[in-house]
Length: 103
Length: 103
Image (cartoon, rainbow over all chains, first blue to last red):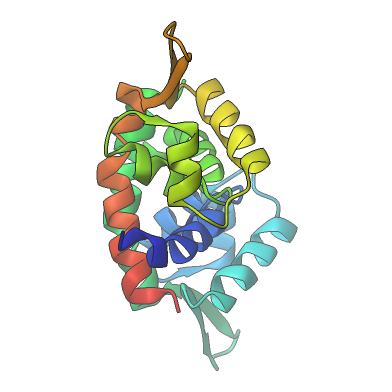
């Protein structure tokens, strides 16, 4: 069964996306590069501490990148990589499923 | 943003599917109702203890059901519910993604 080799990858993907707020952060970034404060304002219940932590984890996983623009004041934006952008079909399917089946 | 209300559902789905072996067990059951020992034989590294635990969690989540046939010897089969079967499109997308992007 070919799925046997895919499984660990599959699990690591779900494990990352199962962390609180991660899905929503990716959703926000699917609209384009965004600053820390913009994400933070769009998700009122998400603390800055947890947002920093999630950004770091997503950057380590190669799902987002951090762009620093040396302006005054300095501008920092977070953007999905190709790996991150290609999560969209899965997230769409997951949302469809959860919308019907999760209470 | 409509996604704000969907997010907790989305996370709970990913949290469940991120548990070790869960994706693979669902994959096996997508082929039809299966006995404990058959699943256990198909996934050699999965211990019976962990398989029992996953079956229980998946049953509690309404993703599988346990059918008991009062034959001699008694026959017990595990089967995906409609909720469980409808995970297929998401799992397919996740596998496609993981196959390309996860090392």
